[in-house]
Length: 171
Ligand code: FES
Image 1 (cartoon, rainbow, N blue to C red):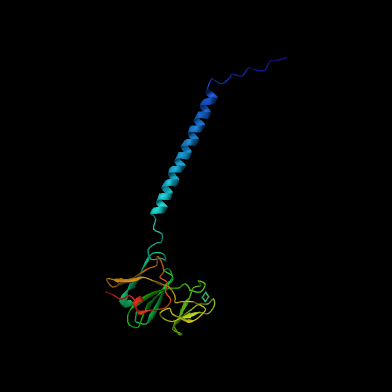
Image 2 (tube, rainbow, N blue to C red):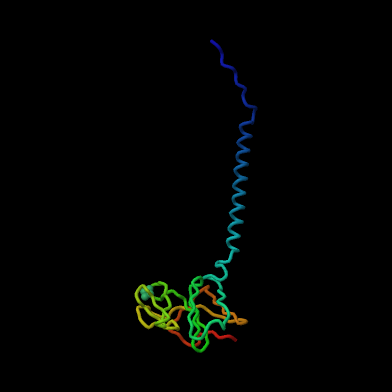
């Protein structure tokens, strides 16, 4: 009977060396992954929460003299209506209904905001004219600098009713 050819045993430590290399490779890959994750998280943290001109940030609505007294202009990306009151003051009305949060629309023929969900209506200043909405529409702070109207949509201001001190004027 023929003897099988003798195999040469691996040199001493060869198996151990490859295992060590494998561990080194794995640890290196994990380290690189950790660096990538940390870098990615830092970039996300530095990113603004809302792009300029969109809901959640400051929206430049335009030149104050481009909004006639008594007008209502919708800014869909900012989720508000810019109201210019008959006396020239500005009010940014959040489009979210104070009942259950549906989006209201402006009905110029009726001179009112209307909620399609349960038929609440609101006047030009956002006051409730027909329930079930429990209070006036929320607003956003308005500033007028160098003739430009800006609306800060970071956080809405809640209110029960409209009062004239809520209007913003050019200083
Ligand atoms: S959500 Fe507007 S009336 Fe109900």
